[in-house]
Length: 163
Image 1 (cartoon, rainbow, N blue to C red):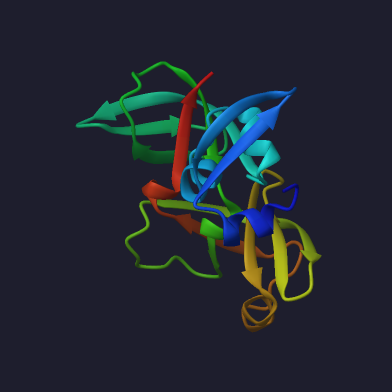
Image 2 (cartoon, one colour):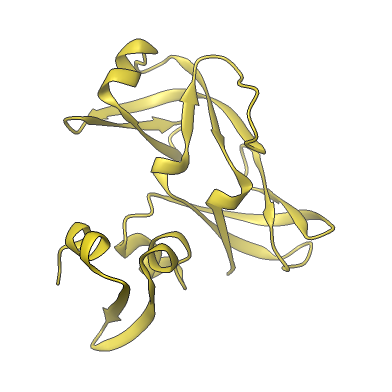
């Protein structure tokens, strides 16, 4: 199928073809949350494709400098390594105030763009991080362009690949 929604609902395993060749085969979770490379990540709708480098590693937990912020996740990559960072927009939680949650990553920023997609709202923060939220949540939080927000996501929502 060419319909990603259909594939997510119906399939036990998915194969992604690029240029007439199989680029990755895996479960729905593997394909959508752990793409093998940047091209596949883009193809399956991973809107947060960030670049950075590893600044610290302690007991398998790495810190990645992405320029405007630092992200933590688990990885076996080494300090100094340049990486691509993938975060699905539906894994990013938006709030107006800092939240006490189990999410290890918290980025403060300003909403630079809001796109209403019907029941879902696409929110850009600092022009680089994208989050999806429900229309109702966006209205309740009174989200609008220029407002200061906090974006949080768990370290398990971060997928890192060496460049």
